[in-house]
Length: 375
Image 1 (tube, helix red, strand yellow):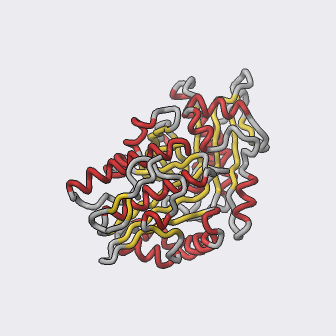
Image 2 (cartoon, rainbow, N blue to C red):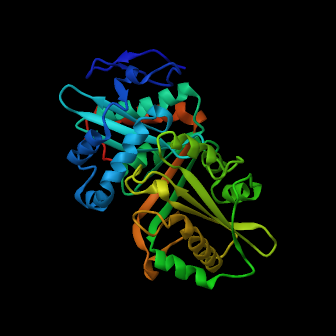
Image 3 (cartoon, rainbow, N blue to C red):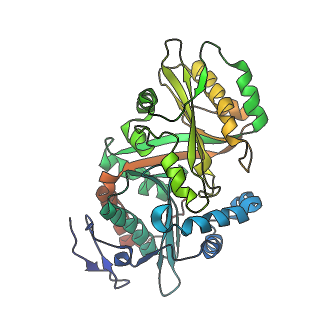
């Protein structure tokens, strides 16, 4: 590990090139964690146009609930949800947030930078360095729009150097299926291929399906290799501050008894992610299925999983997956946006740190425009 600090010529603060020392803290990067109350943070999001008018309008009916959820999570410190921020004397600032998605898998998101490249670098480097030193994580993941060039470089671009054993890139679609449509999808079910809800114990067959669809990194990051598939341990942590985080799982079997598709219905505090990804229904379909079989399997699973969303405040079923969803959209589903998700294991944190450091070093040398914000 390279723990030698150099002074940044613009800020006079220490900077740690290369691999970070595991003893580094947030303050070593000029950062603070959970420093702003959520209301103040949201106001900054609005002023920076990270919360642009259309997104602000979509969140408006639930704003008070979302704010309350963030306030509750903040009471748990870094156990559930951390927001790292950086301030400059001239008013420039940057922030990055992350929340516990599975047992030790975190969703890192909402990179916002206003008037500072150095701040963006600081929060991203600190997020890897401090979490490296704590040795508690299994993985992090980030979801971004493929049209976001900076996010594609910062997150999508890192997987080439890290390798498939420790990172994963998953392009996909994200749509909202109205409840009435979800109900209709279940009418064409195949009795020979039943859909069953799992009881939460270990299920090696589900892990095998997930591995075939997305690989070992996904299995580990989502805790599908554990015996607490419904995230009961995670739910108990969230309950400490009056919140919930759990998962319900439906699988479809083929005629030989093998699991050929699954729906992972995640439920969590509304608005932890401003696209409601904390409540997504993630659909896995075996690559062995042809297009029509995959479509029927997805339809049956979305119909079954709709039971998990009866109390979902925005309504409908927010469905994520790789399989084309054009037919769902034509049938009445609302396309939210394409999303690319990147997952990386904790053992790759030092390499992610170096990737981010090189990316920002290049931008700082050119003194280009501030990085585009990650939606």
